[in-house]
Image (cartoon, helix red, strand yellow):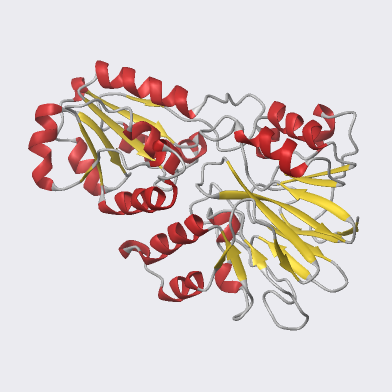
Length: 394
């Protein structure tokens, strides 16, 4: 078995990793690079057999739907099989088909994606892949156990242990994964060591307090951070409004359709789709409204008593503090605002926990700006730092 991280060995975002044998080549993720510069354009990935047909490649697997893992899906040559979780596929399709960013070519390619299912092994060529559903700030995220040539490799993808389903990780690792030869692990927080890891339940409890203190609670949150959307919607008490727009509701409907049978948490909460006719009732009764940083919601915010309102900023602070950001101006439209967020990525301590759990002979960090820190927190492990494009034989 061979591994090549085409991009992502020393940066957060832009992911693409190749796993191969003498008979089979697979790529995990094809993502755009990330930047705080609003004018930044990601460089294109150029992977033979994936972006052209010069040599064989047998499939591309997506860990989840975030753009730094899927953003270059249209660069993948036509006809190459694509694989993703069923809910992730639906969310990608809804996003690509939404009116403000409709992309027919992207929608057609997403429709061709084949679904895999958690815990069910499937084979491509002589490589067996077992996907496991894990907690991340994207619903239907996966890590992959990859077995070929007598080797066992665990590719974590993006994950965390402090989310809604984070406690399931240990059970998966103990009962379904066990010891592996190689672990390729994300390390986003290695360059953010002071970042606190509150749970989504902590955020839900805090929103309940704000709903008692303020008549109007506005939440600025990524529309696809759906565990958070469900948790905060469930914090709204009877007699208060919970409002979102039709696009947000369509994403929630998709989650509920796929997962309501797995947990009551994913059953559709009482939520009303936004309409101008609702504003008088919302002003009278109060409650929570999910908003976006645009002119439409700026005009709405101006209609509410500032002394009775709070805006909760529930996203990564980097979007707010980057040079030229217009978010501070938008946030100031509410009477007051505060951060209400937790990371979608595992803390350094939780990275070390997962490493010890699977007892790998070799650890390779990626999706991080500080890969060298992994060796510092796991001094008893063989940690290999690699370069983009470097091929390793395991």
